[in-house]
Amino acid sequence: MELQKLVDQSYQTFLEQLDQTRIVLLHPNSRYRSMLVARLINTPELNPFYYAMGPDDIKIGAFISAITHDLADQHPTFGRHTHMLPQHIFENPREHLDLVVATFARDLAEMHQDRFLLILDEYDRSDSADDVQRFIQKLAAKLPENCRIVINSRTLPRLPWVSMIAQQQAVWLEDDSMIVNNFYGPSGQDGNLLEVFGMGPGFVLSNGSAIDTWEGHLPRLLFFFALDRPVVTRSEICQAFWPELDPDQAVNVFHVTKRRLHKALNTDVLVHEDGYYQVNPAMHVYYDVMEFATALMAVRNHTDINQKFDAWQRATDLYRGPFLQGHNDGWIQERRADFRAGYLDALLQMAQVCAENGRTEQALGLLERALAEDNHRDDIHYQVMQLYLELGRRGEAAAHYQKLAEDRRKDSRPISDTLKALYNEIVAMA
Image (cartoon, rainbow, N blue to C red; front, side, top):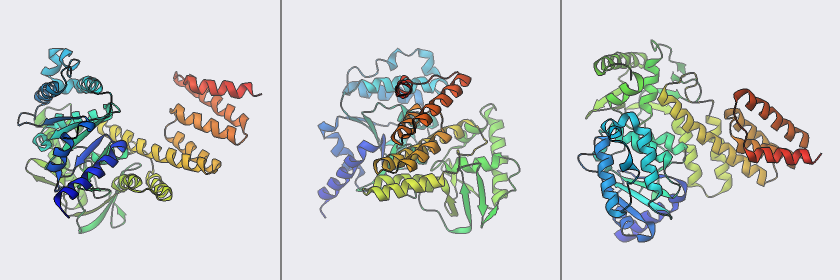
């Protein structure tokens, strides 16, 4: 097949994914990455904006300054909000990262009324930059609805891809196909099978037997943290686990924790290469979180609604509870929210299919499961009350609202006007 046809196929696959994601990673193994980027840049109807990472983009301040300057050349008013931030913000942007991300996203929101692309080329130049990786991760959640980020890199960026996939924030394209499993590469086959379960309290089995020789919770959590990304830096680990310690103390505690991890699993779990740590690729590991994300990716790969439903069902079956339930470290709470979002979306999609096919009771049960996980979603409460009405159970619809109103009063949380209006309609039916 001639080269142009291969690039055309990659381009069509890319277009098919734009409505379903926020970030598109052109996988390092893609043979036509550069040609596809050139195609995107030269397709005016995609409204592309381009930035090539430079050698100085290893500090968040330098990166923000450079990308703002380059994008202003392509869109003259870009950066007007970012430039208005006080100077002290950029003297220590790490401490003000949320503000910088929100302000940068506000500038992006004014770039174009139609859908547009922000292409980040040569992204691997930022591999060593913890703060830049963190910035892009946070930006993915703040992007304007009409903006898509395209990442072209010779390495796998150090982003939490599995959780981003669960939120439908990211997809990986390898030429004309979407990667739907083995997101960090296939697991090795050396040694005993380790079955790792992060959904729920978090535990590890070795050949079916639970590991209980962790010497505290930190070695176990370090293992889960390392599974979270393709590679991590030591500074990233220390910042996540021991931000209150000075760097030397944090490094010492890290090495003690790493030794305990290796002792618990009786192997060198974390391997170090070129300044990065990763879970030993030779280890034979099953991880339920990876399978959870794989099921959610399979939904995007299917066109048949029955196959989609089966994939949603598989994802919800794997969700045995909030991620690492019982622990509240910052990075755990972030991942917990990401995976919860994927779980809730699967339940809601299944409920919609059931409702459309007249299986109202089943739809109601799925929505109740969703509320058991997140009782603060007024849109789900609204759907529950509507289904009660469809079933002719007006009293239960009213009782549902009244119970919610009582709970909200106790928590000092408001109820949406839409939900109040539906309740008033129910009362008026009497």
